[in-house]
Figure 1 (cartoon, rainbow, N blue to C red):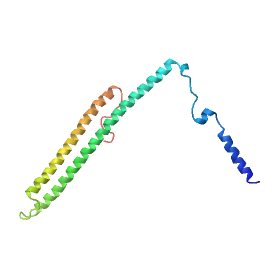
Figure 2 (figure 1 turned 60 degrees about the vertical axis):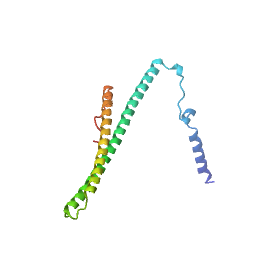
Figure 3 (figure 1 turned 90 degrees about the vertical axis):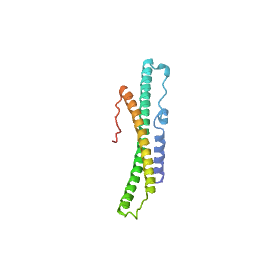
Figure 4 (figure 1 turned 180 degrees about the vertical axis):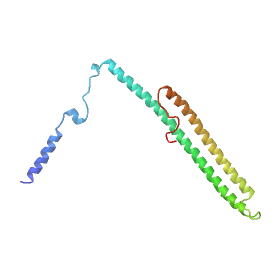
Length: 162
């Protein structure tokens, strides 16, 4: 008999907790309103607010998409500069080594120097192109920023991380 009472208590607790609340509350829904009974002005006001919100979200989406393009272009430019500087560092290291050797035991021949300089020039050109793409996107962002300022938004002039 002692086991019967705790089991009965648990069973009754579960049974009463499941029946608590109305049918609409149990499903998590509110009762549906009749669309014909709403005031026209109230619905029009809600529609206008929703349209304005959608317009703001479109503007923000355009801003964020352009910022994402700028960040990616700037990362490419940063990587190009890094590659150029690494090659320049390696060339300087070999230049120092070459200068410390005698004229007969040169480490780098003129033909090798010319190839290395051509590689450096190629990397420099890649960096310049990447930086130009970033500047073009920044120009577009400046135009978009002015449009957004005219609409009354508070838009940062530069990245929030700089």
